[in-house]
Amino acid sequence: MGLRLYMAPSLSFTASQLKQQDWSQKFHTTWSGLKTPLPANVHMLTLEQWGGPTIKPSPTQPFLIRFEHIYEKGENSELSKPVKLMVKDMFVPFSIETIEELTLGANLPLSDLQRLQWKTKDYITGTKLMRHKITAADNFTVILNPMEIRTFQVTLS
Image 1 (cartoon, one colour):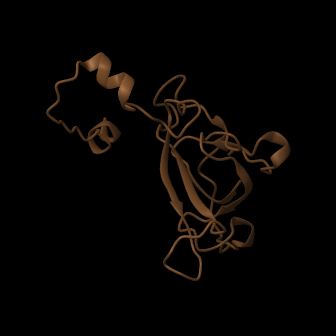
Image 2 (tube, rainbow, N blue to C red):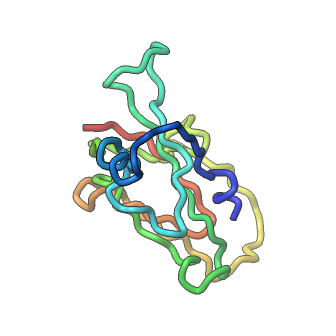
């Protein structure tokens, strides 16, 4: 419900003598940058050009993409399950050429992250995150677990 309220479409109107059918044939009234809709339990938080030495965008700059799984574990019998996204050919106007997972703040490759080790008791049992190496061979398949946000730097072709 929060996403529906926050991401509600902006409506605009104009005076016209055309009938709706004629208007639809003359103008583009719908468009999506995705080849297929995202699963109902996934939200794309970020798709933006990222980094570079100048403010002006260039074709060589990478993009930042964030996906989030919007359901908690056990919240829904189907939508709370881990979900697979094939990111390589997800978009209409481009394909993803390379992908690298970053930390949530996008300030460090996830592979370089070194967490502090704490002496703790493990009170959570039976909770194992599904992870795998993301490769071009599997169409850059990403697995999102419940309530997980994953951040990626991608280059486009």
